[in-house]
Image 1 (cartoon, rainbow, N blue to C red):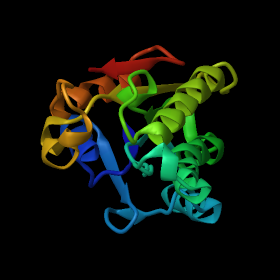
Image 2 (tube, helix red, strand yellow):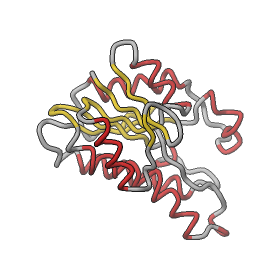
Image 3 (cartoon, one colour):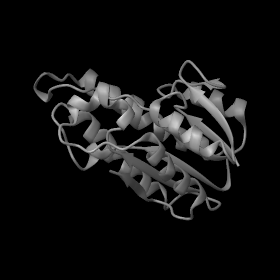
Image 4 (cartoon, rainbow, N blue to C red):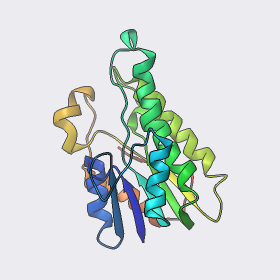
Length: 199
């Protein structure tokens, strides 16, 4: 299976690549690294990516930035970061990528535990993740030729505790290898419109 993995150099992306490269061809994509580069905030960049890569059997997104900070001092520009990057960036992959996805192929997007369990300074992340999950559930009804779409919603990763642990007091972490199994389930399974929560 030919799998396009956007965000391949990140912690989640590396875990996905390690899990899936055993029995699939992985095309690694990053903003500045990988086999190809893409800026998900720019439609032209996403189109160029697909024009270079061509048809694939699965499209996986394990990327997306959001602003963390107090609501009381947040600006619309800061809030818009997550909307343009993590939310619309992944939506762009679907809107443009559906024409490059094989019949019966799958999209797998990435949300996060904050969609259901908010934390301090995480208002933008909660809104973006919740919006993505709603998009996945609705889009599953309209994809053509047996194409499927799901999302994976991980909690804080064990490998990222040093950087993000203070934002998640009392949360149990999970290793990237366990999160990666949910992406395999999405790609090789039969379901669509699902959010696989790895908490």
